[in-house]
Length: 440
Image (tube, rainbow, N blue to C red; front, side, top):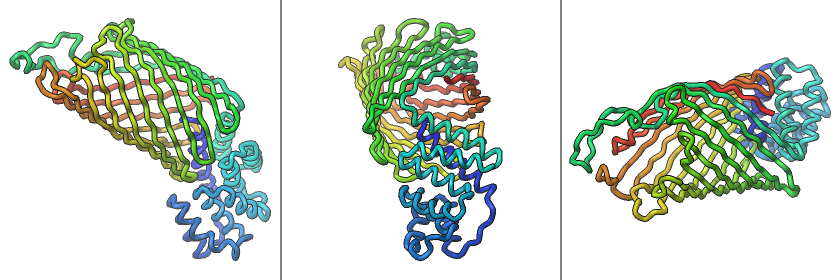
């Protein structure tokens, strides 16, 4: 998760913690309705309800507090500051109002003022769980506001994979291209289960250029070694270079990437890609976006598989008040081989993805995602004498436990099922792993 999304998620966790420790305040029908709307995640509706009464009720701390919260949820950040300033003028020790005005200042891009307000919140003697969340919030803001930042990580993983070579889960297959004769699959073709260990690391540079532009660059690599099936060991290295532009609620990103993938220590595939993305923050809790990518895929020892791939889609994310971040995307994909004699390897299709992340407590993040992709191939497969059709389903579940600010442990389970009408590419795969990570 990037610094901006991390800040948003921490903000929701912080507000939820304050709600647990907040005293009961006097209310009336209007503020009761507004409070119920806010607690239901309907900030824009609460703002529409309260805004007409501002001239008559400005100066009432509860009304102004709810108006400030609602304005922040509706993306009216300046109005939120005005309302919350009125609260603090009467109740300077109102930590909830000070936390909300810090979020409003952050939304306006005034990160230094936001940091000062959160530091004041912490000095006012908040409960321990709130204090820990504030600490992580301030750290995330400092990371986002850093003039230039070079970060890195190293990680080690151990796990079990039921299908290290992504092969069919069967021993024999009848092939129509050979008169439907049954063929016994050799050991390296059918699914192989094995334990594995991997090492990886990377570095990322973020350098603001001014006028809303930021330079992004990164390097990453990893090696995975199976305990028994070394012929399926893999290695990869990737590099990226891009630029983002932030303009009010919009963020534009253009990123070039390149990399190489090794199988059994031999060069298997090279890739170059260019990705463009636009994101808009509709309000404090909702974000939409669109993206497009072009990739050139080269297989040094299997040139017949060289291909060009296009992907385009849309995304949506929503931050719930309890700290749950939910996201979804839909996309279309097209891949065409560069060799006109191998059109049966090219396909078109699309997919859906959805997932969520939850700050369970100050040190634990739960996450999960589900995906589906359809691929329809363009020409008849020469072995199976028909066009291949795949429906691939995936589920990923896990949790990250932060032992310190730098060290974390992540156990996760990944399930994949590819339902294909050509039995050589019909398979399922289950993988469990535990990763220890150190960030710098």
